[in-house]
Amino acid sequence: MSQSPSLNELLTQQPLWRAGRAPLNSARAGEAIDSGWPTLNEALHHGGWPRSGSCELLHSAVGIGELSLVLPALSALSQRQGIAWVSPPFLPYAPGLHQQGLILEQQFLLQAPPAQQLWCTEEALRSGAFAAVLSWSRDDLPHRQLRRLHLAARDGHCWHLHFRPGHCEQQASPAPLRLRLTAETAALGVTVLKQPGGHAGQSLSLPRPTALLHRQRPARQWPVSLPPRRRLALHSTAGQRAEKATSPARASV
Image (cartoon, rainbow, N blue to C red; front, top):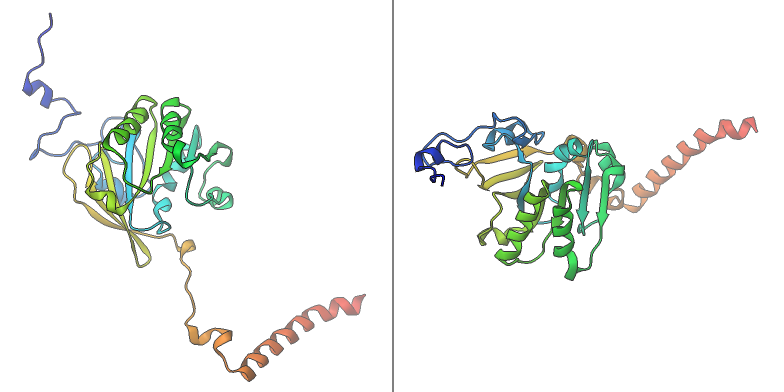
């Protein structure tokens, strides 16, 4: 009968890390998925997103740019395997995904009734048909269910992106990687709450793509805020420009 390995032997293995020792690095090939954000790769001890298992993204509100954080990695994964979207809060915008480099033919939208969303997510994770599965939870989930999702993702060699409300931060979770996302001016704030291979607590600010920033004019420059005569003159000028632009065509006819 083979003897159980000693404590020192276990500590020399890469999957284990002792507090106070240098964090595990990502030297092993295939250990992580490049996030597309160099500063985020540096903050994560494995050098990027995990290839399997659950990753929790705890956001203060929906629509603060949480998808922009994972789109570079999803774009790379979609080049060779499918991506499943399980009951997203909003319908994914296909032209926008295509602009970010995702292969549209590799995107699968799974709409499930609320009572079956967890079952649908678990089956998609365990199927082995997807490189990543995105799911959204609006309420607290039992620890047992969170563990089932994580184990299903490990068994199916799938990256589970679990978007959860910010108040779930206080709940214990089996997910090895947990990030808090907050909205900042022209940026997305990311705080590492938990990660494998070393200590957590890293905070960084990731700038939003310039194309996603809409600079709104001050209200005093809006046409509706102008006096009626000024507003009428503005519309008259625009009409004259349009007439001049079309008059040559009318003359040719």
